[in-house]
Length: 275
Image 1 (cartoon, rainbow, N blue to C red):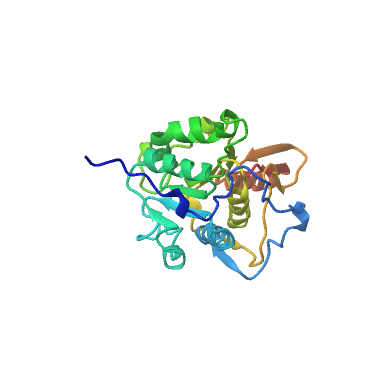
Image 2 (cartoon, rainbow, N blue to C red):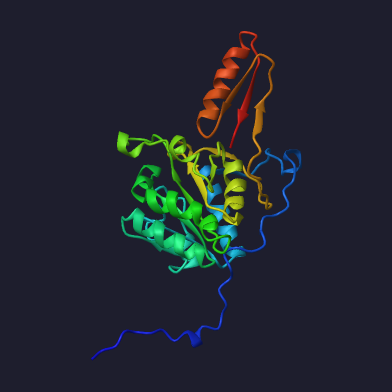
């Protein structure tokens, strides 16, 4: 009679790092202490995301990326272009079209001490994985009495994109932003995207990182020097005394356009980017 396979645990010599331990977040500077937003080095939003992931993967062997088409195809939107060549198939992992499956697998990896980055081709597809990403990852630290954390980043395109139907165009922040135990980040420009994604990868808690397909080609100065942008700090984009326009992500640019139109009529507005 065949017997069930029992792994030989004595061969495992490398201790798995605990998921819950000292925070690895850097010391954050004040906004005015961050590297300059002006300079000659201009890159796309997608390149800023790629740099953030690559830098953190070089720094920490526990970080890996998985999702649909992230490896062989270089990402559906070319965010992960070239990463398979540098990091190999064990850290840049193509998955089947099963968000529920690979999200759950990544959560288990995070509980065991790894630091997964999960790419949803569209946040609309995350609805298929609602149970693991809303009911498991954010609650794990509390349900385990602090024994098991879940340092994981879920990222991908949120909202409408080019030639996408309504079922591919969800803006999920309204659905997900009040989930206890989870952090949400929605950058509006390449500079913030890189600094905030690096912080998200270092964070000990689950982070929902929402991008926009319509902004992936946006270009801005991003310094070569390493920097991190802390969570919970909004950025004042424009000062005024008549009213305040508050937004995040791509709509920040619409608010700036509206503020400029109002300024032409003598009405000065604040514009606040919640990030």
